Length: 153
Image 1 (tube, rainbow, N blue to C red):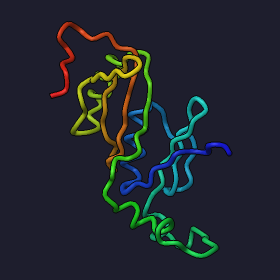
Image 2: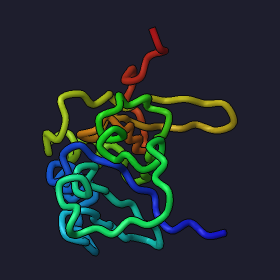
Image 3: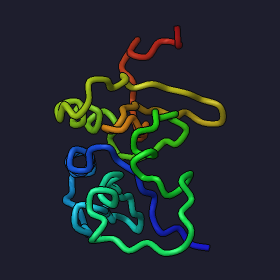
């Protein structure tokens, strides 16, 4: 088995595409109408699927086989509350620089400060969410300044 892609079923397709273009600093690699957009980089693929495209454009999509609403009702899936059980993790050589870049983009209302966790080795990261509430974690090399990181309270 091989990983084809990880894709997100989005409520607002264009808003999600724009968000990921800015976050990943690249344009969409491949796009199928306004139904599906792919970002391919470093041998990986993250994609955005428009949760409303099929229902709004039935003449443009052919479905065969028995419909299973649990998997196939994309509108219902797009409208579900996000449980935050899946995290997209990215890595950058300079976490401080990347943190400042992402903050300056003003993509979201909430972005955490840089945090630290250590169980086997030190791990620095910050988190934000995409337009559908999917958690994004960015990790990387980081040298904290004196007194910058305090224990969780």
